[in-house]
Length: 425
Length: 164
Image (cartoon, one colour):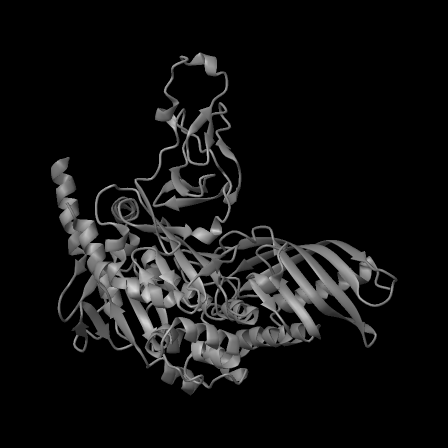
């Protein structure tokens, strides 16, 4: 048995070939249900996984339920003001104690035999308690907390394993970009707007992970979108295609990565500068908080992947929820920037709706390609996918692999981490 | 005065335009100040939250333009739809002006393709409660407001770009 497991483990590592000229991944990582099961155990149930933002649970008693890998958990804000991540499983006979997606409650109750738990998981009581000894130690039978729950500036991450790096260590390579992302709010705070956009596609979760910072597909998959922008005289197809050549991609350590368009203080060249130009009170608040160099960084537009399941976009927080090897849900939590004019957020919401969601003018084209890939990947004549674009021209600066905006450096970082986690002892 | 029969005829004709992909004619049914709304949560103000679709007339035109005159991937191959309109109710304050019309719709949708293609070849069914405001214009009726509340509006959806 142990021997078989060892063989399997070493072969997972072989599915990503970190060749200096021909980085490639094996198609079975998208199609093999056994690899999916292993991913759930090794990646989603053993590393830091994004589960929500604190603003989703503003008051004591607020809760939401989530899947971490395949496991149901409750995120719950207790009367003490703290958020708890609890396994959604009654300690008596295993039924869930909460079935709703989100809500507000003073307690969680198992409907089978009325075992009742507080918002921090403590067992409060059960039906016909006289059937248990009077000195029963109830503290042993609370809802089990996840091994680790940590917040970075309100972004909540769960790790079901007590071992391995801290959240701070995991986020270190991407932290400054996350900080810039918050910086479009002069108080560096966001408020998540519910409900999220949700879409589901018949394809593997990594197809979405690979796509969010892919700067190569835009002129082809989103030509339709570019034509809509041209119709509305916002920009010509040529202008958008030129813009899509600007900036860079960054492959970061720990599997993170991003696509970046250059920042600018010129209202014609960046959204942040344009909003500052249009709304003097916003400009004033931003200038009070940040100097020019910081404003340039903040105004750069980035799609940031935090390994393995979180994307930070300019309009939304994107969460990848794997459901099966060939079925994935994606949740797009649009957020308001705090302390900016209301008109700015409303225009961000309308802009988001226009491109994203199941009936947007852009996202459904991406989803369509994911389904095309899922079908094509069943053809195994040559089972390898190439992720070698730009390997010959990338450069390494301060541990970051920087490439042309259309190159696959961040995808390579993602799969290096995938390979490491999947072949770890 | 709009009778239930007249309202039903109007809604069935609208459904036919969509089923036959006559999107330009469908767009022409809407008034210049029209709103087409497919919410995730119909109880929230669409201005302060995010919807599946929240089109003013300009965006509705973009939607039709995208479907008919640009190289869309997600509607190539295009959706086939068969729409059923039922449970029509008409409400009016005074028999004149805008009428509120409610109905239920069932939309069967499928995109055809080659063997084994993920996402194609399987019909899916969307059920919706709909609300319209129909306004008398030049002796006929135009849509000033259309709201489509899908049964599973708050659940994960596969692409809905065919116009639900």
